[in-house]
Length: 462
Image (cartoon, rainbow, N blue to C red; front, side, top):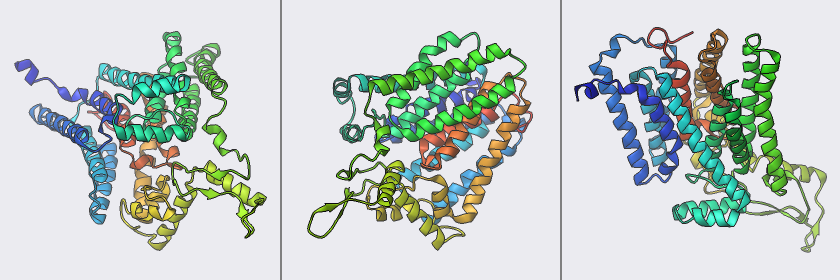
């Protein structure tokens, strides 16, 4: 018993965050499950705080650059929430996740190699589950959905029915973006942990995760994560050049790439009509479908000449419609956000204020801009945009410095961390990654993975 009381439980914080991120679809209803999830995080923070005080770890640690950056971001968000007094349940939940993550980063000890391996294993396992379910939905749509609908809530059933009508895969937690995000995160973990010894054993996971990611039919996450993985792979190639032969490098990099290409090819052969065809203009007699971002009332593509007879639309109008399809209805939201920013360019309208502007797009359910940068400008003005931009760019620079100075021992972890941050920043162009709880959890995971290593107690910066 005495041994149990004096154990350092804080080394397990990273697996706890990974588990919470992977299973956070249970907390998506903001009901009892969300309350229990938040209570669990608060309880774990209390445990870490007690260990922190009992073992007098505060005497051994220094407040480093990354601590200051995370703290500045956290305080900035909380001040903006207080400024606008937008205490709806989503904002409260977001604030809890953000505050708990910051506290855990200070109270927790560096994760052991075993804790890091367990964290990755949890994420890969859940990602494989999501991928396999979406693969079955593609191969046996009616049978699979019928079985799944027996074990999920009615609101989730209604949400997935709407997604099915729009061509999406199956969503966990009433968020198809979260589902694709977890699958992509699992794929990137497997990708950057491939080496000469485990290459063959990783091929099945690469195939399943790649196929499952495209089967979810989230074009944004698919393109962004693939782009981030390619960029980081180039960095890895440059970093490992010289330590491996050219043949070994080609084998390590070409095999995962071929797995992804093969999975994509099989998908397009098995599913000839997918959401990738959605951007193609087919006929002037079709109508503009309701989109994920705006879901506005259906708009007839053609114009009318007054007697009810449709007339052909111009080439310029056709291009405009195709652009609306390509942006998935986001253009009207982007315009509203930019106009609101121009009204108050210095300090903005306040955090979460765009949720009151968004319904002007014609969609009463819209709450965000679907672009982090425009939303920051709209809600926090130039001042807030500069503060948040500085925090994330500084962290980006610190990760790059760790990669360039790495001797190879933690290289895969640093590359994975950079991939998460890059995906978050790139996806921010077309979605609200910074405002989504699961992206904040992935960001916290990245902070632990990269900046809470074995050298943490001695020095935070490279």
